[in-house]
Length: 389
Image 1: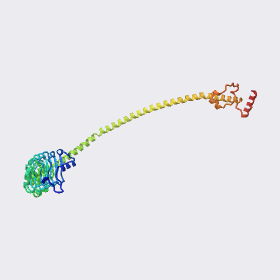
Image 2: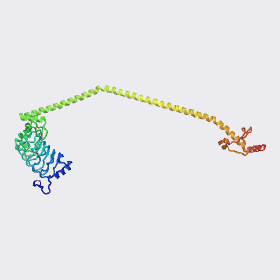
Image 3: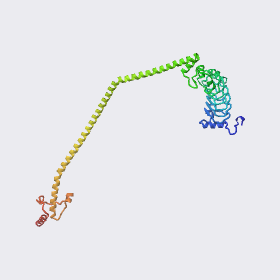
Image 4: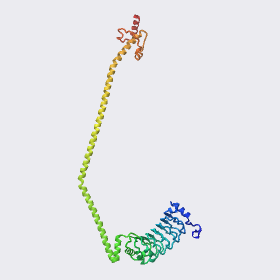
């Protein structure tokens, strides 16, 4: 194995096997060219290598390792975001071929001079915070980055009056972080000078509003007195605007109240009309319910009348049948008395059950006319009838 790729004992190396393993662990592909993002941070690598097959990368995370040189990245033509913070770089090198690079983070290293970025025509965001940049000469190269719009130079060692003029040369700069540098505290009116020098600047550690820019430019033109007068005018204008807005709001409130009062009559009429319509609807529903009730009552009345007529018919039929039943009972009783004399007694129940069993006999003329007598009389009468026969 080549000496450049030999790892110190116990430290990982960016081998092809290691890169494949990392890619798969983070949801990547086994085919290197298909990966557009590669997370190689916090691995403890010492050298950037073996990325030749990963030519489709658009985002590469190499921060928080032990790299000392930026190398072996020339083939990444599609790379847009490169994160190199928290390593041991002392200079910016070997990035000129990354034409598609938009964002570069090289913070928390040991960079002393900004260089090697002028060929990155698409670079818009650069983070150089927490390095060891000391003066305007160390950041002069930023003027050559024509599309640079957001720069973070915070927590360096920048000092000197030339720093403001140097940064003012960055044409499209809109956002700048400078907190933590000596120049911010040692240069009088640093913020105002920076705002006046950079016409496109909209953020300097905090947002820059139009009133602040106007007062800073007035300060630069006519001094602090003119600045205070302009501040008073702007404040009065702001108060007038707020007052007018409040007055318009109150006028609107009053117009709403007036319209409400004028519309009370219409509202009341609408309420009366609504109540009337509801009453009419209720009356119609009640009438419909009554009609249905009358129909049901009439039907039930007819049913009751039919049942009553049927019951009367049944009673009449019973009345017609009952006399016949009495006649039969009397006849059976006579027959029973007659048959007793011959010793052919039949019970009343047997004769009633089957009338066909009644013997065909000729009844005497007085068979159907008899008097109820006591049991002794009945015996005497029976004996006399036996003698006569």
